[in-house]
Length: 122
Image: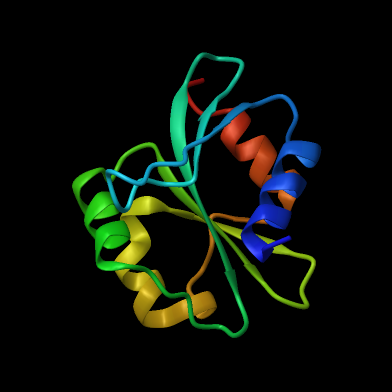
């Protein structure tokens, strides 16, 4: 199983209160991996990234998507060998690409990320 698929399985298991739809889009490059809807009916997208180092790589299409859609978009990053994940706002994509995991995340850990995303739209 690919690392991002494993991360998706963890997200589904540890954040079950959010309805997740996996977006498999070969025609519109850069579309995030997941569409989420929380109990408030608030929709958002989530890009999943797994990295071997502190550097996080994005395609030009992914960067373009997050620059064009700065609201209600998020990036969840896990470094291989680490249990913890970090959540970033989509509008931080340029900083995240430049600074990597040194950039301060809005949440750390799946539980905290789940709580944060669950409260969107309150």
